[in-house]
Length: 153
Image (cartoon, rainbow, N blue to C red; front, side):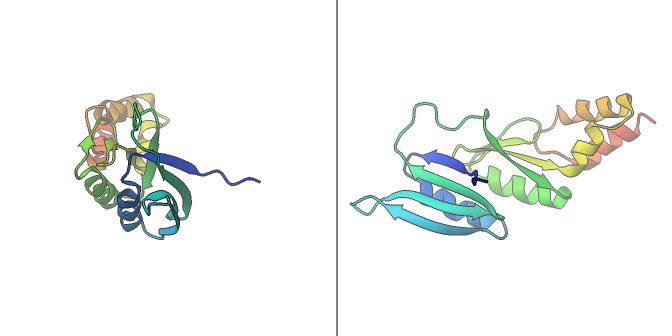
């Protein structure tokens, strides 16, 4: 099977982004860097917790990154949500329902696995209560969503 990896286009801050991302996620490393003739970084390959990525310093792009493509981080608990959210949003901007844009413009979803359980609860009233609270949040707060679902009982 061929390997599928994500390739990201940066203006000229690829290495700053790669160094940041590989510090944020465990089991991450920069695997290779190539350069233009003048020494500037052309491209890099790295892994984030074992997931392969590629990137280029391709110069200015008209659209840049948008929320139409995001990287999703499934978190085991609120402390993981807090760590990844707070670290990645620093210098960027929060959005709604677990979405944020980091300082490089890349969109992320920081999602506790418990959220998936709550919004797909077999009891439609509990699921809708969970969804209603989620829709009001930027960073997901699991306790608030659980409280809303439990209030339906």
